[in-house]
Image (cartoon, rainbow, N blue to C red; front, side):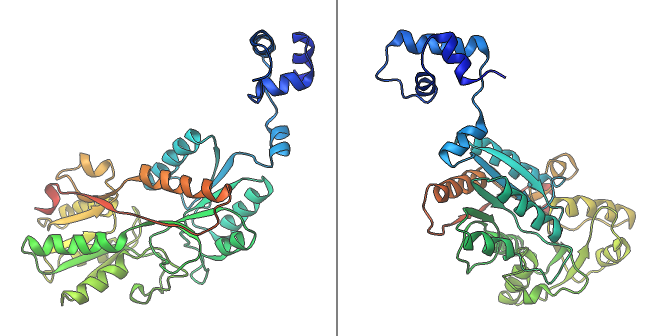
Length: 339
């Protein structure tokens, strides 16, 4: 391995001179010396040791990104945009997929501390332990004085930095959208993550998935009787109960928790030989654009989320410890499915 001493010997200068050139501290030296050092660096293919640099500066220029699942398109979009923003700001990322499991989340947080990352961006979403408090690792980080930003749509009263997705406004806009079009009884089909779980009594310290909660809230505000059905995944064990729900005539439009649910409902409608009701989804997923009819949907600008999260975490790394909250709104795309 080529060392700084090798470069110094080849250039006929001291090690300190090479160090100053590589760290842009070469104002007081001649142009010829600087160019000679850089020429030798290139010819010898010298690569400065990141580990050595981090020991000197106390920084690794690494950001840990802890996400629930890297198969889900929205989390992948977040990761891509965070990496782009991190690179622009001179940081690299370590991506951690905790697969909705508390033990994996704990493992990755511990691993990131041991790797001496400069900060963490964390998206909470726990499936395997209904009693788990999603603030656990965040509180630990804050107690350590560790820079952390939470990507979260709930937990309104919190003493840590977060980028909040405006779920409340999106659901209110969805209900009002249908009411203004003349529909009176919007139903909700949502992804139920626990068997024993009441979304009408959300604990903001534990859960960050508030769309059903806001649906209940705004139905009550508009004197609408809430009507819901639950959906798990593509191999939905509740498939038949969802089909039975679609056969009902007690509602006239549907709010789907995401575009995947919306697209799947078209398949179910075909299987029960019934004309689909107007519906809308969330995420603005690509498959919502290629199905027929195209899905009316709410979209999150993940590039804005990534930029704000990186700005906040870098600010904390540089010493700004005052918690910040940034609210990012959805963008609404009206297409054929809601007509």
